Image (cartoon, rainbow, N blue to C red; front, side, top):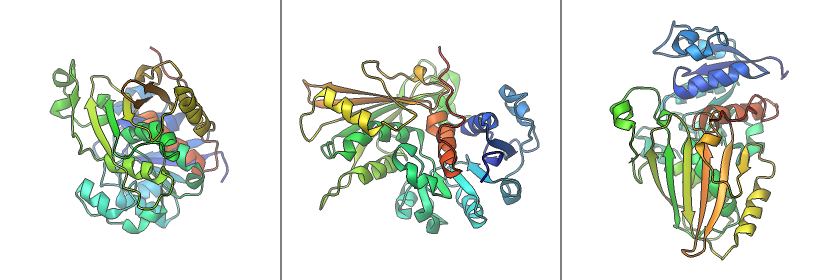
Length: 354
């Protein structure tokens, strides 16, 4: 496929992740944005819904139909709610379009696990074997050959990246992983709800869905797959608690675990440097503690590694923008690979600071 121009359609483009997809796709040097859909905003110009995009995007939102997505597009992004992407993905696959789905509908390999966590049957379980989990740092080669990529959630992206090198070396003691993660309010989506009302969320810090968050199975699935093969290996499990914090965007994930052997901090940092030596968007911060304000608006994930010698724990900290590396930017990173482009294309802008 020629690198100029690749016609792109985005479904669910009036949510926060969808709007970020529109912004990044419109700035992408090889994408031509040809269609954007939204049920709530159908018939309304994009620039009226998002004045920030005035002068950049002249399209009008359409209703979601197969024709809107497939008639003029070479590649499709789906930023639809969980459980709503199955049929659109199937339609894309039938006609051979490259599709990146930002929902959870194709992230889990086992349809029974999906049904248990999302309380709905998977109507296209036959497509699950064709879906590649869209974390380029782990699955770059498979993504490049895929027609269907399931882009990870924002919490799992941080959690998996901060623990992957330890899992790949078999260094984590089973059942000792505790993840304490915090998200900006945009992670809850754009639809209004009482917990996200300013007086409710401002000057507040609230844990929610303790031990029940729907991102848990994809964290466990991906970390389990990294473990060295061992007979009778117990299923990998994590204790995961998300928190809502009063900032617009950003994820800060702190993970604690015990190791199978004592390992000094310099050795751990070397392990991470080696594991991520080809990862354009993972930055190892050394003695600087990762902070969401250092990655706002960028596609980077910052990771710090620390050792609590007294308590015998390793602590990793990851920070990313939940709407970029945790959603739209990562989806474009995967699509670049699918289309034979350098994965960093259109994504190299630094964070906005302060």
